[in-house]
Length: 491
Image 1: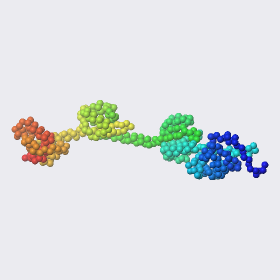
Image 2: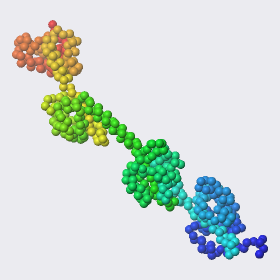
Image 3: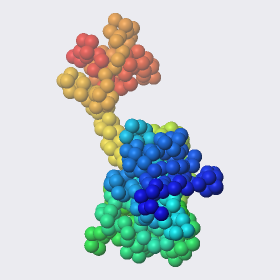
Image 4: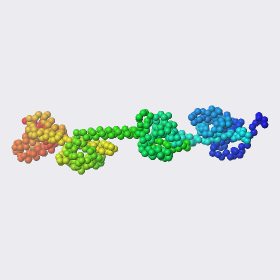
């Protein structure tokens, strides 16, 4: 046969019928580089309706479709699958990204393998490209990759067949300070995420059986020498490209442990200050105010032993002189109020009265809401004030020789610094009331006033009470100041 004679066309009618309905795309190329046939799947994978739109020749295909590898490196002309099969190469699972120069929205991912059909003499008769469209699969994988990498929760993916890590996200790298290259491709034996884990043997068994590993505490060795991190680790079986894998997720326990340590230290400082405080203090549980702990000042001041008060409510202990104070305290605490310097009377174990300024503060102790009660003993202060008032009253019985400024100051001490808000004048008093007021300002006592006015002592006292009520005072010293302010003299 003349070697220069054209290659006879092959009758592929039956072959075309056989492969037309395949799920894979099939493209047939003649040895003369012409693209002679493609099934509907192959046309759809290229976004065209007719074989001619693929290009009549192999070089036209290269002009119509741009092929790149998944690493975004473009294929050279001789690397195109259509050129490789024309060269007689057999290959499989070549994955390429396919785009069109005239259609920016077109994008496909093809997995291509080749097939060379020969005649009886072994000459190439038909060259075949068999194509699978992996666009949907890779799109899902890309979404997973983006979500995995963007997720702030630290995570690793271990391939079960090799027990090597195949993916790591930024969250894990930031938590551990590992470099990506120090993780990827390394085995679970090199970077043991189940080190010191609770029920480690169970976790290893579940990993081997591709079962869910429930959350458990573990310790990660960090790249810096002799450093580690406490975590909660969990494993979830997943498949990636039909490979069994385990997705490990982590919760960093260091912040919680630091907070717990800080809380313990804070509670220790609180406990020490509580025990050594010089004023009586107690810690009570809410809502019934059951005593959890008292300090030494409380025991000394109230006369109780520690075992007598622990677990007892304030009401059962009989601490309150007046039950209304206990009810008021419960109502205020129930309403969420903070109590500051509430004046109450408490009873010691010997039933003596202790006057206190009672203050409270809500505190958290070992996660439980409690109330800290502070009692400032003002018994001696109140006794001193009472003694002072009685002394002033005794002096004021003969106050004629005091200056007005001293009288006012003594009256203010007795009355807590408050002046009468009554706006009456001397003209508003009856003649008898003015007489009584004048005698008071001169320092007369009840008996001398009765003799001067020729009245009984009881009648004089009635006149004095009426006068006090009218001018808004309740003590002789205050009446003297009121009268002097309005021109009554003591000569």
